[in-house]
Length: 278
Ligand SMILES: C[S@@+](CC[C@H](N)C(=O)[O-])C[C@H]1O[C@@H](n2cnc3c(N)ncnc32)[C@H](O)[C@@H]1O
Image (cartoon, rainbow, N blue to C red; front, top):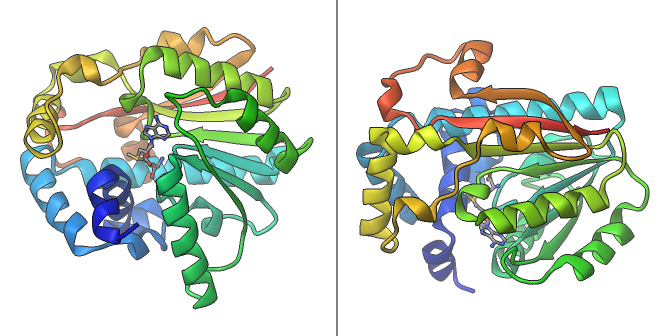
Protein backbone atom coordinates (compact mmCIF):
# COMPACT_ATOMS: atom_id res chain seq x y z
CA UNK A 1 0.00 0.00 0.00
CA UNK A 2 1.31 3.44 -0.83
CA UNK A 3 1.98 5.88 1.99
CA UNK A 4 -0.53 8.34 0.47
CA UNK A 5 -3.36 5.82 0.66
CA UNK A 6 -2.38 4.74 4.13
CA UNK A 7 -2.47 8.28 5.40
CA UNK A 8 -5.99 8.77 4.06
CA UNK A 9 -7.31 5.71 5.86
CA UNK A 10 -5.34 5.79 9.08
CA UNK A 11 -4.84 9.45 9.75
CA UNK A 12 -5.60 9.15 13.48
CA UNK A 13 -2.70 6.76 14.08
CA UNK A 14 -0.25 9.04 12.26
CA UNK A 15 -1.63 12.08 14.08
CA UNK A 16 -1.28 10.47 17.53
CA UNK A 17 2.36 9.58 16.90
CA UNK A 18 3.18 13.00 15.51
CA UNK A 19 1.71 14.73 18.58
CA UNK A 20 4.08 12.65 20.73
CA UNK A 21 7.02 13.88 18.70
CA UNK A 22 6.18 17.55 19.32
CA UNK A 23 7.28 17.41 22.98
CA UNK A 24 9.70 14.52 23.43
CA UNK A 25 10.65 15.62 26.93
CA UNK A 26 7.04 15.20 28.00
CA UNK A 27 6.15 12.05 26.02
CA UNK A 28 9.61 10.45 26.48
CA UNK A 29 9.08 8.98 23.01
CA UNK A 30 12.19 9.61 20.96
CA UNK A 31 11.00 7.43 18.04
CA UNK A 32 7.53 8.89 17.36
CA UNK A 33 9.07 11.45 15.02
CA UNK A 34 9.90 8.71 12.53
CA UNK A 35 6.22 8.67 11.48
CA UNK A 36 6.11 12.37 10.66
CA UNK A 37 5.14 13.27 7.10
CA UNK A 38 3.91 16.42 5.39
CA UNK A 39 0.30 15.24 4.93
CA UNK A 40 -0.12 14.56 8.63
CA UNK A 41 1.58 17.82 9.56
CA UNK A 42 -0.88 19.82 7.44
CA UNK A 43 -3.76 17.93 8.99
CA UNK A 44 -2.38 18.56 12.50
CA UNK A 45 -1.93 22.28 11.92
CA UNK A 46 -5.62 22.64 11.11
CA UNK A 47 -6.63 20.28 13.92
CA UNK A 48 -4.72 22.28 16.54
CA UNK A 49 -6.27 25.53 15.32
CA UNK A 50 -9.81 24.26 14.90
CA UNK A 51 -10.23 21.63 17.64
CA UNK A 52 -7.85 22.21 20.56
CA UNK A 53 -4.25 23.40 20.74
CA UNK A 54 -3.85 21.39 23.98
CA UNK A 55 -3.93 18.12 22.02
CA UNK A 56 -0.14 17.91 21.72
CA UNK A 57 0.22 17.79 25.49
CA UNK A 58 -2.76 15.49 26.17
CA UNK A 59 -1.20 12.92 23.80
CA UNK A 60 2.33 13.34 25.17
CA UNK A 61 1.12 12.83 28.72
CA UNK A 62 -0.92 9.76 27.77
CA UNK A 63 2.21 8.17 26.30
CA UNK A 64 4.29 9.19 29.32
CA UNK A 65 1.79 7.77 31.80
CA UNK A 66 1.52 4.35 30.14
CA UNK A 67 5.26 4.20 29.44
CA UNK A 68 6.10 4.88 33.09
CA UNK A 69 3.43 2.43 34.27
CA UNK A 70 4.76 -0.38 32.06
CA UNK A 71 8.38 0.32 33.04
CA UNK A 72 7.40 0.14 36.68
CA UNK A 73 5.38 -3.08 36.21
CA UNK A 74 8.27 -4.70 34.33
CA UNK A 75 10.69 -3.80 37.08
CA UNK A 76 8.57 -4.42 40.14
CA UNK A 77 5.83 -6.87 39.14
CA UNK A 78 7.67 -9.05 36.64
CA UNK A 79 5.51 -8.25 33.61
CA UNK A 80 7.04 -10.09 30.63
CA UNK A 81 4.73 -9.39 27.69
CA UNK A 82 2.98 -6.23 26.46
CA UNK A 83 -0.09 -6.71 24.26
CA UNK A 84 -1.21 -3.52 22.54
CA UNK A 85 -4.77 -3.57 21.13
CA UNK A 86 -5.21 -0.94 18.39
CA UNK A 87 -1.47 -0.27 18.59
CA UNK A 88 -1.39 2.12 15.60
CA UNK A 89 2.10 3.57 15.20
CA UNK A 90 3.01 3.75 18.90
CA UNK A 91 6.64 2.92 19.68
CA UNK A 92 6.63 1.37 23.19
CA UNK A 93 8.69 -1.71 22.19
CA UNK A 94 11.70 0.49 21.45
CA UNK A 95 11.33 2.46 24.67
CA UNK A 96 11.29 -0.65 26.87
CA UNK A 97 13.75 -3.32 27.93
CA UNK A 98 14.73 -5.65 25.09
CA UNK A 99 13.68 -8.82 26.97
CA UNK A 100 9.99 -7.98 26.71
CA UNK A 101 7.74 -9.83 24.25
CA UNK A 102 5.43 -7.48 22.33
CA UNK A 103 2.19 -8.34 20.55
CA UNK A 104 0.83 -5.50 18.42
CA UNK A 105 -2.74 -5.86 17.19
CA UNK A 106 -4.53 -3.53 14.79
CA UNK A 107 -6.36 -3.63 11.47
CA UNK A 108 -4.41 -5.75 8.94
CA UNK A 109 -3.33 -2.87 6.70
CA UNK A 110 -2.03 -0.87 9.69
CA UNK A 111 0.04 -3.74 11.13
CA UNK A 112 1.41 -4.69 7.69
CA UNK A 113 2.45 -1.13 7.01
CA UNK A 114 3.99 -0.78 10.48
CA UNK A 115 5.85 -4.11 10.23
CA UNK A 116 7.45 -3.12 6.91
CA UNK A 117 8.46 0.30 8.21
CA UNK A 118 9.89 -1.12 11.42
CA UNK A 119 11.93 -3.72 9.53
CA UNK A 120 13.28 -1.06 7.20
CA UNK A 121 14.29 1.19 10.10
CA UNK A 122 15.86 -1.77 11.93
CA UNK A 123 17.91 -2.71 8.87
CA UNK A 124 19.15 0.87 8.71
CA UNK A 125 19.87 0.70 12.47
CA UNK A 126 17.59 3.68 13.16
CA UNK A 127 15.73 1.67 15.80
CA UNK A 128 16.87 -1.33 17.87
CA UNK A 129 15.72 -4.92 17.29
CA UNK A 130 12.87 -6.07 19.49
CA UNK A 131 10.75 -9.21 19.93
CA UNK A 132 7.53 -7.99 18.23
CA UNK A 133 4.66 -10.04 16.82
CA UNK A 134 2.18 -8.20 14.60
CA UNK A 135 -1.37 -9.51 14.30
CA UNK A 136 -3.99 -8.05 11.95
CA UNK A 137 -7.50 -8.06 13.43
CA UNK A 138 -10.68 -6.02 13.08
CA UNK A 139 -12.44 -5.75 16.46
CA UNK A 140 -15.80 -5.39 14.73
CA UNK A 141 -15.43 -8.88 13.21
CA UNK A 142 -15.43 -12.37 14.70
CA UNK A 143 -11.79 -12.62 15.82
CA UNK A 144 -11.75 -14.34 19.21
CA UNK A 145 -10.91 -17.97 18.58
CA UNK A 146 -8.11 -17.36 16.10
CA UNK A 147 -6.64 -14.45 18.06
CA UNK A 148 -6.74 -16.47 21.28
CA UNK A 149 -4.67 -19.28 19.72
CA UNK A 150 -2.18 -16.83 18.20
CA UNK A 151 -1.69 -14.92 21.46
CA UNK A 152 -1.39 -18.09 23.53
CA UNK A 153 1.24 -19.54 21.21
CA UNK A 154 3.32 -16.36 21.53
CA UNK A 155 2.97 -15.51 25.21
CA UNK A 156 2.63 -18.99 26.75
CA UNK A 157 2.48 -18.52 30.50
CA UNK A 158 4.06 -15.05 30.58
CA UNK A 159 2.52 -12.33 32.72
CA UNK A 160 0.99 -9.58 30.58
CA UNK A 161 0.19 -5.89 30.41
CA UNK A 162 -2.62 -5.16 27.95
CA UNK A 163 -2.83 -1.64 26.58
CA UNK A 164 -5.84 -0.13 24.84
CA UNK A 165 -5.47 3.61 24.19
CA UNK A 166 -7.01 5.90 21.60
CA UNK A 167 -9.29 3.11 20.40
CA UNK A 168 -12.46 2.83 22.51
CA UNK A 169 -13.77 6.21 21.32
CA UNK A 170 -14.24 4.57 17.90
CA UNK A 171 -15.78 1.27 19.08
CA UNK A 172 -19.32 0.34 20.13
CA UNK A 173 -20.14 -0.72 23.68
CA UNK A 174 -20.66 -4.29 22.52
CA UNK A 175 -17.23 -4.38 20.83
CA UNK A 176 -15.75 -2.94 24.03
CA UNK A 177 -17.46 -5.51 26.26
CA UNK A 178 -16.31 -8.29 23.94
CA UNK A 179 -12.73 -7.01 24.11
CA UNK A 180 -12.66 -6.77 27.92
CA UNK A 181 -14.18 -10.28 28.18
CA UNK A 182 -11.49 -11.45 25.76
CA UNK A 183 -8.78 -9.83 27.92
CA UNK A 184 -10.08 -11.86 30.86
CA UNK A 185 -9.68 -15.10 28.88
CA UNK A 186 -6.03 -14.44 27.98
CA UNK A 187 -4.88 -13.00 31.31
CA UNK A 188 -4.11 -14.64 34.64
CA UNK A 189 -4.18 -13.23 38.16
CA UNK A 190 -1.81 -10.29 38.75
CA UNK A 191 -1.83 -9.33 35.05
CA UNK A 192 -2.72 -5.72 34.16
CA UNK A 193 -4.79 -3.63 31.72
CA UNK A 194 -4.11 0.02 30.87
CA UNK A 195 -7.05 1.73 29.19
CA UNK A 196 -7.77 5.26 27.96
CA UNK A 197 -11.26 6.64 27.31
CA UNK A 198 -13.39 9.76 27.54
CA UNK A 199 -16.19 10.36 30.03
CA UNK A 200 -19.66 11.49 28.95
CA UNK A 201 -19.06 15.06 30.20
CA UNK A 202 -16.63 15.63 27.32
CA UNK A 203 -19.67 15.94 25.04
CA UNK A 204 -20.64 19.23 26.77
CA UNK A 205 -17.35 20.93 25.91
CA UNK A 206 -16.56 23.32 23.08
CA UNK A 207 -13.55 21.16 22.23
CA UNK A 208 -15.79 18.14 21.52
CA UNK A 209 -18.11 20.23 19.33
CA UNK A 210 -15.02 21.44 17.48
CA UNK A 211 -13.90 17.83 17.03
CA UNK A 212 -17.25 16.80 15.55
CA UNK A 213 -17.24 19.78 13.18
CA UNK A 214 -13.69 18.96 12.15
CA UNK A 215 -14.40 15.26 11.49
CA UNK A 216 -17.58 16.14 9.58
CA UNK A 217 -15.62 18.46 7.37
CA UNK A 218 -12.53 16.31 6.94
CA UNK A 219 -13.44 12.66 7.33
CA UNK A 220 -17.15 11.82 7.12
CA UNK A 221 -20.49 12.87 8.52
CA UNK A 222 -20.68 11.78 12.14
CA UNK A 223 -22.76 12.62 15.17
CA UNK A 224 -22.23 12.67 18.93
CA UNK A 225 -23.53 9.11 19.30
CA UNK A 226 -20.88 7.75 16.93
CA UNK A 227 -18.21 8.30 19.60
CA UNK A 228 -18.17 6.12 22.68
CA UNK A 229 -17.66 7.57 26.13
CA UNK A 230 -17.15 5.40 29.22
CA UNK A 231 -17.98 6.18 32.83
CA UNK A 232 -15.66 5.37 35.76
CA UNK A 233 -18.25 2.87 36.94
CA UNK A 234 -17.50 0.68 33.91
CA UNK A 235 -13.95 0.12 35.15
CA UNK A 236 -14.90 0.04 38.84
CA UNK A 237 -17.28 -2.85 38.24
CA UNK A 238 -15.22 -5.00 35.86
CA UNK A 239 -15.61 -8.61 36.96
CA UNK A 240 -12.28 -10.26 37.97
CA UNK A 241 -10.44 -6.90 37.83
CA UNK A 242 -9.65 -4.27 40.42
CA UNK A 243 -9.25 -0.62 39.43
CA UNK A 244 -5.95 0.46 40.99
CA UNK A 245 -5.28 3.82 39.37
CA UNK A 246 -7.26 6.51 37.57
CA UNK A 247 -5.71 9.68 36.13
CA UNK A 248 -6.70 12.33 33.62
CA UNK A 249 -4.98 15.18 31.77
CA UNK A 250 -5.28 17.50 34.76
CA UNK A 251 -3.86 15.09 37.35
CA UNK A 252 -1.03 14.03 35.01
CA UNK A 253 -0.19 17.68 34.28
CA UNK A 254 0.30 18.17 38.01
CA UNK A 255 2.35 14.99 38.33
CA UNK A 256 4.68 15.80 35.41
CA UNK A 257 4.82 19.60 35.82
CA UNK A 258 2.98 20.36 32.56
CA UNK A 259 1.57 23.89 32.22
CA UNK A 260 -2.04 23.89 31.04
CA UNK A 261 -2.64 26.61 28.46
CA UNK A 262 -6.35 26.36 27.60
CA UNK A 263 -9.55 26.59 29.63
CA UNK A 264 -11.31 23.30 30.51
CA UNK A 265 -13.89 23.99 27.80
CA UNK A 266 -11.20 23.79 25.14
CA UNK A 267 -9.51 20.59 26.33
CA UNK A 268 -10.37 17.01 25.30
CA UNK A 269 -9.75 15.60 28.76
CA UNK A 270 -9.13 11.86 28.59
CA UNK A 271 -9.16 9.43 31.53
CA UNK A 272 -6.51 6.77 32.05
CA UNK A 273 -7.16 3.60 34.03
CA UNK A 274 -5.00 0.82 35.41
CA UNK A 275 -6.72 -2.47 36.26
CA UNK A 276 -5.27 -5.56 37.89
CA UNK A 277 -6.71 -9.02 37.51
CA UNK A 278 -7.36 -10.56 40.91
C1 LIG B 1 -6.01 7.02 17.39
S1 LIG B 1 -5.21 5.56 16.86
C2 LIG B 1 -4.33 5.13 18.34
C3 LIG B 1 -3.20 4.23 18.07
C4 LIG B 1 -2.35 3.83 19.27
N1 LIG B 1 -3.09 3.09 20.26
C5 LIG B 1 -1.71 5.05 19.88
O1 LIG B 1 -2.16 5.49 20.96
O2 LIG B 1 -0.75 5.56 19.30
C6 LIG B 1 -6.57 4.38 16.85
C7 LIG B 1 -6.16 3.00 16.37
O3 LIG B 1 -7.24 2.09 16.61
C8 LIG B 1 -7.33 1.21 15.51
N2 LIG B 1 -8.70 0.71 15.40
C9 LIG B 1 -9.84 1.44 15.35
N3 LIG B 1 -10.91 0.63 15.16
C10 LIG B 1 -10.42 -0.64 15.08
C11 LIG B 1 -11.02 -1.92 14.88
N4 LIG B 1 -12.33 -2.06 14.69
N5 LIG B 1 -10.21 -3.02 14.84
C12 LIG B 1 -8.87 -2.89 15.02
N6 LIG B 1 -8.25 -1.69 15.22
C13 LIG B 1 -9.01 -0.59 15.24
C14 LIG B 1 -6.96 2.09 14.32
O4 LIG B 1 -6.60 1.31 13.19
C15 LIG B 1 -5.84 2.94 14.88
O5 LIG B 1 -4.58 2.38 14.67
